[in-house]
Image (cartoon, rainbow, N blue to C red; front, side, top):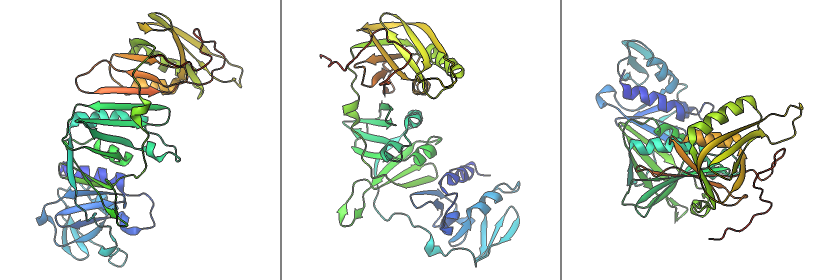
Length: 385
């Protein structure tokens, strides 16, 4: 089977709703040299050879998927009549009495798209690393998406769940300035793209008032992916990320990550905390349950690590699982943890890279139990620049 068509089947399954009261959404539409599926918010279009079919019709997607599993299936089914298709040397009859009418199927947005950028494979790979930072809070829908900004010749992408934030400044320099929220379904479908992705945006005239970037189109290979963009506003990332720190410690990411993984196996509690006491190059990292233990079992693990300490002494604690996920989401050998204020997010920086600049903010624990900080901070002291 054509590998591109096999990829269409895989991607289409991510779009089609598993349960729907609209029967037409369970069908694939074949028309004008294309086959497409939709959930009304996202539409996937795949280019076909016109000689493989005649006219336009709706085909049940589950039937199409089953046909592709036949050993003799080599190409797209050929339509022989209004209710018959041929595939793998066999003829199948479709029941016209249960199929929806063509007019019931969603059409593509009839608006003009403008090309704004081309995302290359390294960009898509970096974008994938940010998916771990997406939120799921129903009251903060903007955090379900990745914010994409192009300004001053740079592309910046941000992902945040309210506790952790990752921003990547990419080396790409498109001529057009643009900004939109990238839905998680689109992120998932683009992450395995084997070719660069052409990005186009469009604005619709809603109620007589033009809205900015209502739709996006992503083209890669023989595919076109149309999506309605979220309307929510994203927080001001520039105001949140501040690389100026009072103290910092640069350490081996893998050593600390492996220690955290083992500690979380021994202390599998959702209230597990990780605490840094940094006063010199050899710093202490303590992992313990930051809550009263119901079983009476109290486990506290402590390990010393070597690093490069700069600036003031500080103690700071994090949710151990959040910290472990941060260390897992990056691939550099060294990582710098910067302290600014005990009640503000810690600034995590990667070594200078030629490809991209990665910045992460991680919120500390406001309250800790069962542990005394070595360098306590009883109040939020203003930082003197």
